Length: 430
Image (cartoon, rainbow, N blue to C red; front, side, top):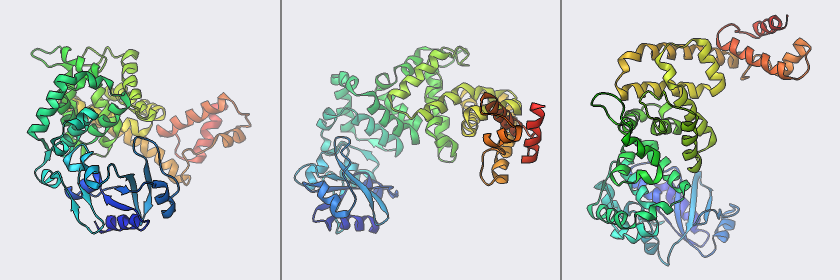
């Protein structure tokens, strides 16, 4: 805490009064190391504070302009005080666990019992004020996100007020822009995807942000006494959540998103009817949520290829997929296949194939890594310019084809050195 107080005091050296607030204080109370110091600053001129600290300009994006920078080795963001006092500022914050402030002398300002709620693992609207929800209904999703991530209970009055609001003002949820839904959903599924979606289901929110997931409730899996594809989705998310804390591969956004969208747009458990419409549907949701395009591509690759792991695949096929979709995407696809098989109850049938394919992928990736070791970090034994010089060729499509073929030869073990790469190229043009 000392370092955070030093940052706070540095801000106050400019003549402005400041407090640690929001996620910084909440995380400190939970024993979690904050990545960024968040402050409220009592100043009519944030630009003057910025200039006094020598930090440049204030970021005016979003509803609350923020001064962002680094002080004393810590990243920080400082927002102007909302209201005339720190108590008024805290009253504007949605949840009591976020409505705590720390003064530069270490004193605590906690008018709404946020520390008590943290100790008792309770989520409560600040001051039991339902008007906070009326002002911004998306706060409901934020409330569920915290409840899921920190395994906290929702206070009975907050739950009652939120459910009553949804009964009377459900139409307000339709007014929330998709990109705002997306920000909260992405935060919600990163740590506890199954619990978060379960809570959203309990509050009947899923039709508002993912209508085509909700539609899967009416799609049976075709098994005698079976489940709906919606239930299978929750099973996949449950398995993913059980492994998230110990598996780095699963902590990628693409992995959890693939679990969320696995059955969207199809009518069969095995996904045999998946087509371009399904991909467009999934891409459409993620695009509206402002998910980065590279993550969207990874999700598409995982959903399209994970089932390949259930049958033995040759090194050549694996190498081709690595070159087209990246090593990360293929490693994640194999791990996703493992989770899906466990969730759907047929792991015993495919375990040997998954193990064999995992081994083959490891061999392909080992060969590509050897290139980097032998060439001081280069991704290929030969560059396009070197290929043209060696074969006395001019730039063109043929050079690209040779480089792609050489990559395949490296990945499948046919080429393992620069000398062998040159020999392979001469053979292709002999």
